[in-house]
Length: 183
Image (tube, rainbow, N blue to C red):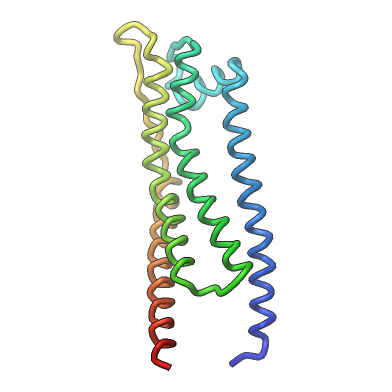
């Protein structure tokens, strides 16, 4: 057995402590930035016309459309916060205790699921948001636009990888616990 295992464990704990704080900071910044978007109607209108709606689409922001847009746009934000929460808990666990546990495996699975579902949530959110923003338009001028790119495919594959690694970790931890019970 290598003699530097305690040093590695301390390094893992130290990096994990930093990452636990970083995940909280990112989550808070994400919530603040998302909320700030909806506090500036002019900026929101510009963002909607550039990123949510097709070029030249007309729409009128009303309090109801802003509120509905906030809810539909929050779908991927909520999923991201779910993943960040499990990342935070995973890093806290690695900071405080054993690394290879069934709990760590389950947290990796949940993070992976959030990451893998993010492209679907983003497409759903963009479609619903574009519809909500143009719902006040006359018939024939309402729009449903779904944004698709290749980046979400990579995100889904990375999420799938985390899911499988989490399953493997949980199974390895279960087997180790089972073997300890025999000794």
